[in-house]
Image 1: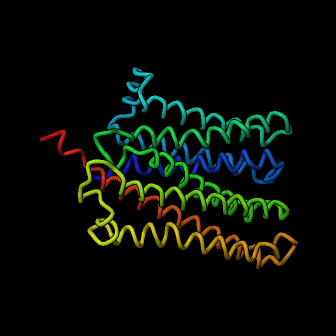
Image 2: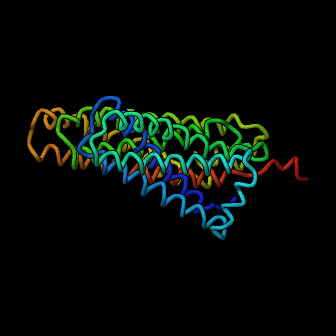
Image 3: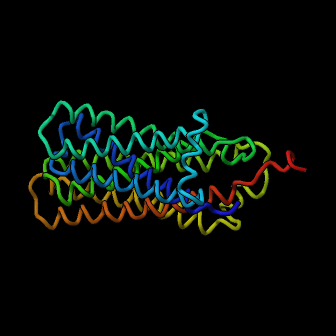
Amino acid sequence: MDVQWPLLIFSVLLGMGSGLLVFIGIGELKGAFKKVRFVLAVSALVLLAAGGVASTFHLGHIDRAFHILGNLNSAFSHELFAVAFAALVALVYAVLARKDYPGASKVVGILALIAGLVLPLTAGISFMMPARPAWDSFTLPLMYLGTGLGMGMVLGAALVYAKGDAEDAPLALRVAIIGVVCSIVTMVAYVAALALAPFAHESRSLARLFSGSLAVEFWVGVALLGIVVPAVLVGLAAKRSPKASAGGSAVAVKQTAGYLWAAFVCLVIGSVVLRVIMYAVATSVESLIY
């Protein structure tokens, strides 16, 4: 199956935005990230808006998005509502971030956390279909969620190190590490699910990933840049962070931020490449056609 780039870009951007919303929610629950919460909210809103624009290119005409609302039971309409809700929450939180309403900010922050978890799952579920065994697994929406948490949480931590308070740095780094773990686990789970998919076929086999036509994409894009390098980089960030969080040198803070930015870039590359593979292995069930 050809790569549907508008949908791929949409899923990556909404993943980043969703991960940032979860990061915001955790910060509100912990009473942290106040100095950068406006930047976090605006970043999430921009990512969600950009993803929404990207998705319209798949429809051909933006007005066709309104036809989706004609069937409120469809997965695509649920996805549209989830994006709209997440964007609205990000907008409201950005407004509150400029004011001093701690109670309202906490409530909206919790809504942001919920929206950030629900949106990637909703988007992933819309792809599940029995006719394409490589997609007909709940590990696909989990992969959407996990990679989104990885990208968004590491991005959020990098912004904290760049513009936030030093006392928030340890929490931001712990959240980033959790995000990377979620990304790695769900990426591995999705790849493993390919081996268990029904109607086995070479086009969607692990052999194609490990040693076949998709080997370069898998080993370089997913295994190396999407899994190994981000894990090493956040490990290096954790090694440097205690000195910075204790009031250490600006050099240590800058170096830790650099590790996080690099990890974020690698996670984005890994997420994109895994989605390219997702389309490449999305062959239909031949027995239902011939």
